[in-house]
Figure 1 (cartoon, rainbow, N blue to C red):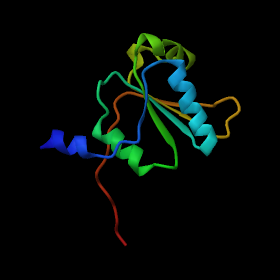
Figure 2 (figure 1 turned 120 degrees about the horizontal axis):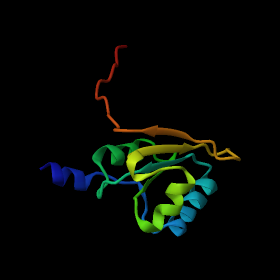
Figure 3 (figure 1 turned 90 degrees about the horizontal axis):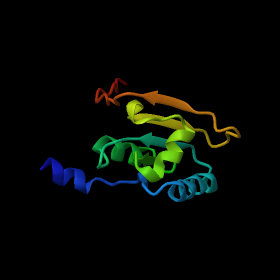
Figure 4 (figure 1 turned 90 degrees about the vertical axis):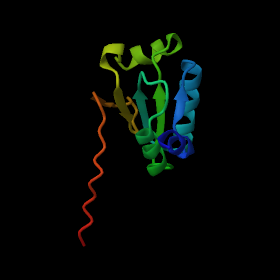
Length: 119
């Protein structure tokens, strides 16, 4: 049942598997729409349901991409100082950043389902 539900979730995550050509397309799309770029460097083969949720929740507010540790993506990983030992890593590049200031978060990502909607 969980696999079926995961397969039915909307997924707006860009996939960067083929190196700089994919990365350039991603950057161009983000620049055209004036969106912050979020790069999730991951070793997971499939997009997690949490990542799919985030891509849906923040659709049209930021552009989210998964970067896989392939040989073709080594140039991108080196550019941002990411190694296979630091995976997973999350990198945020603001839209108006001239020097592409970056904020990096390393380690496991956890989602808290506690919503405090006390009105």
